[in-house]
Amino acid sequence: MTVSAAQNGSAPKAMPTGEPLDRVLRALNHPIRRRILRALVDGTGSATTISQKTGMELSLVSYHLSQVLAKECDIVELVDTVPRRGALEKFYRLKFHGLSEADPGENGRQAAARQMSFEECLILAVSAMDADVFADLAGSSWDWSLAEVDAEAWKEIRAASEEFEARLREAAEASQRRAAAGTRSVVVGVAAFPAVSPGPPAP
Image (cartoon, rainbow, N blue to C red):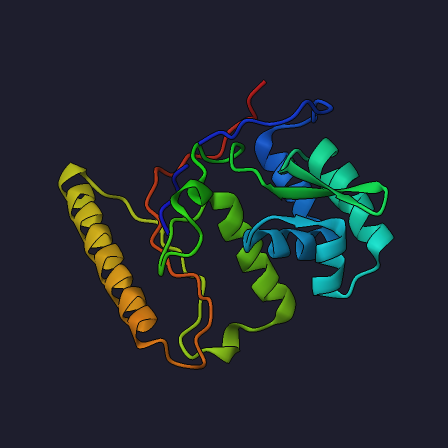
């Protein structure tokens, strides 16, 4: 996983409050919102389509999607409206402007391996924890390391990261060519970024 990313154009909306990370964490701080966000990682969705996909009550999905996630948390955005029986069905997608600067969706969601935003990574990890599925696939884990490195070591880390990502793409593309039954989506990643020492919050 490479944290990378672009701000999308968006329709007029109520101004959200709080820092980007606070808004993302608030969005994840409710099981209904977590399930909605997980559904949106796969692409756009409306309250109706998400309700059908998840089995959750439509009114609850509609409230959390349009009022909380879109207006208050500003983590999803309206991208389309479709006339349905005298009403408009509103379709939303995830936004990737809060914790990163580019939209991996612009690169296409059907690739064998695609870049993910930090928001997506958090959503998928929390969803996996909710469902308690880490043991489903041998070797599943979420491991992080903290290390002190100099400039030469940083170059080695970057080279190892690039090699790992190249091998990941090769493996994913080979899997796609085999088109075998029983494939599943997995999150595989390498993270490397400066650690910030604890201190007072920014004013």
